Image (cartoon, rainbow over all chains, first blue to last red; front, side):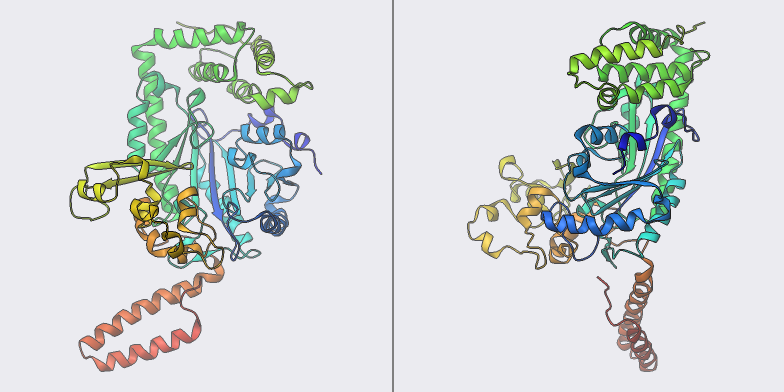
Amino acid sequence: MKNLHEFLISPTQATQQHGPHDRIVMSSRVRLARNVRESSFPGWAKKPERVKILDSILPAVSALPEMADSFAESMDNLTPLDKQILVERHLISREHAAKSVGSGIVLNREESFCVMINEEDHLRMQALRPGFQIREAWNAIDQMDSALEKKLNFAFDNELGYLTACPTNLGTGIRVSAMLHLPGLVLGEQINPIIQSVNKLGLAVRGLYGEGTEALGNVFQVSNQMTLGESETGIVERLEKVLAQIIEHEENARLSLMEKKPKTVYNHIGRAYGILANAHSISSKETMNLLSLLRLGVDLNLFPGAKRALVDELFLTTQPAHLQKQISDKLSAEERDLIRADMVRERLKGVSRPVTK
Amino acid sequence: MICCVCKEKPATVHLTQIVGEKMQKLDLCEDCAKAKGVNDPTSFAMADLMLGLGASQELDPTAGALEIKCPRCGFSQADFKKSGRLGCPECYQTFADGLAGLLKTMHKGTRHIGKTPEALRKSRETGDRLKLLQKKLNKAVETEDFELAAQLRDEIKALSGVVPTKTAR
């Protein structure tokens, strides 16, 4: 069995991947839901059936060319800490992290493909790309799906398309999503009307960890909701247009804030820096919200010499499981807050206070 | 906006329900809302409403005996109500009638447009072509254009020979 921690790319490397518009679009993802014929969906199948399905799907996925040198494992072989780290990396869902016997994961070396087996559906395959690259992600996962359909007998109906456990995913089984950092729209108090108009277009806006989570660190996920009656490329193109508009709104919000309320912006960013660089105990939630402001400060050139990647790395390494992984002893939440503050202070030593005009 | 049940009167009652992690929305007129027992939130569940099971029926102890179950996996409407998810791919056929309305409110259309597995692409295209020819044939018979009808019938015969089953489920 491969060691997950040795397999995963380091947070430093992970945050140094670049993509178009990555100031605002942190990452792009396309996932496809697929099921095999003549088997119950994972939520209804009994344990022996789930194990049988996993045993047939896992080797088929691992043998794909995209998955050469992959981490392929049954979920019961992962510790709760391993699973939480995968959630913090956005490689698996929280729902999947709760799974054990009869569910599995296949992750490639570059972390650009991650397949969840027996989550809500038999297969949830995802292509991940840094920055604004939903079209690239779709092309990649489309190719993987075409290769896999030669080995597995997917449940497909001429009228309804790919059959999924939940009727909300029926048809294409596609979810196209982008993770957006929108501090300008939040500070400028324009985020709610934007969310509402995006919702009206039939798209969902969610928090950092997907469904039912809050927008920690001003990070929002925008994705399609409807999957039946619209083609994959139609959905990708529609999302591309909407995302391009959100990017523009965020850029404008930042410009207008700097023009009209520079003091407010400096105040928020200065205080965020002050706390992060000097705190001796800090929660994960507060850290994320303040790091978001620091990231904005880097984008606005208030921290000359500081790299966005440093902020992104802290965004990852200060989260509970990543923090716990660095320490051998089991920590309580309070102890984690102390260590987190030490780590952030240390990493921000090289970053001087914001330069404001 | 018109009521999604009677499709006649304007919708004045708007409902949002979270089932599992999924959000469902319903727009009803006042009469349909009353008829479905929406006024009393304790007796109301959206899955019931969508699958055509009224609150009163649910309380009927004999209802269980009549309940439809998926012949392949044994999944029932009550199970769908609980989880908002189906039991197996075949459930889509078993519960087709009840699901039709739900899909309409949930999605852009009710027919899949987009990727089709390579192996099924041909049969899907043939199925579509057959439907079209059948329509033309009916029209030809109606208009008593028997020459065209005979031609269409032969075409349908030839095509049907290519795919033994029209619906590749």
